[in-house]
Length: 472
Ligand code: NAD
Image (cartoon, rainbow, N blue to C red; front, side, top):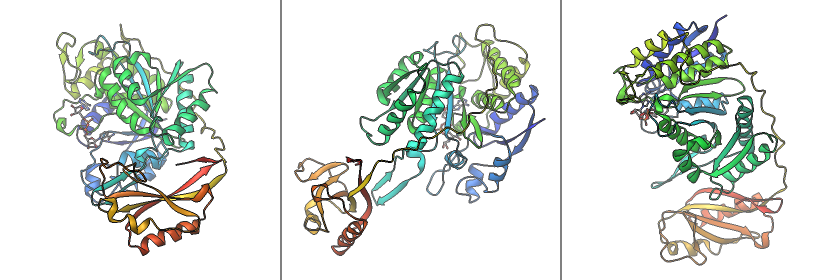
């Protein structure tokens, strides 16, 4: 029985590494019914803003998995990231990126490295909540939800449990982003308690990243919000040997997509030089996912043998370590020729098919009492503050009074400092006197009052407390 699988050859080096990968899958007799879809640069330029004909969704829904080569998103406005669209639309919430060193056959400073980065795939700064607010100010919103955090953190612990891994480490930055990363951290601490046999720890992402780059062998499974995971999985793959050596699985409750972690490397396109290993390792993860674990095992071991033989593409080729520098096609042929062999020094891989994880249980979430306390009104006005302060300082609606004005998060009133550099976006905070609750209508009247004094409002944000604790 062949498994229906969608494939997309993508852009740049995409077609070359996909052809090499399909050549190996075919040589290993993978039982796949391929459905090719066209995505990427050509589709963007044909006028599809997500880089994909909407009809493609039907194919992705029908197939069990999607093997996708990297694509190029054209520069300029109006183009939405296809990768983000597919991940979020299909709910592929977990991005799993193993980064392993193949020392001594691939040069690396980190012989013992074997980390799996579990990256949250749907939220954070990738939610696409971006705005140009003034001619000179843009804003991207970082969104973290309890539901999204619970799903990914539980996935990381389940992954560790199912793969016999010992430790799950969280990277975040809740010393600065106290609410968003703070929530991710809180959820991590809660879920970690359900897995007493797995060690858990947390690092602030900056020092964690430094440690990862310096001593990656101290980490096992890493879980983190989307942006940190995107950046650090490239770092991890590169220090393991090459960004061209890591594959990636995007797993959801209703589908899965497999790819290389790297991009379309347009400078290397059409030269038969790219390393197809990242996409091949993505395809191996796909074979395990669809229950063809024996084929996955044979290909993975043949690939390890090829690395051991020193048959290397340019990115991992090193004088004295490698034996032969080969192109994409020749590398694929060498892997195919090694099918059936076991690596001699690198540990052979065995795969067993694990039952698919049921959709993660979600807690009911917080039901804390919520109270509306005020509003932050963001306005567009050229500095200095004195040019408009008198127009808003007197505004009083019900219990709402002006309490603070900030510029780029720095308080400029009351008690501002003359050195503070100001731009044309100001945040004016109005709160009810003595922490008294206010109404939606009070806020509407306040916005109306801003309009009356001809202030250019670009955005507003309601201010709530939760069980008496301010949420701002
Ligand atoms: P990139 O990952 O495409 O390439 C950066 C460099 O890494 C290349 O110049 C090359 O030296 C090396 N490299 C990458 N893959 C390699 C491979 N398989 N073999 C050998 N060397 C390899 O990053 P970029 O240049 O910043 O991005 C190029 C395009 O890719 C952009 O349009 C970007 O939006 C897109 N992109 C797509 C995806 C995706 O489709 N999943 C992911 C990241 C970037």
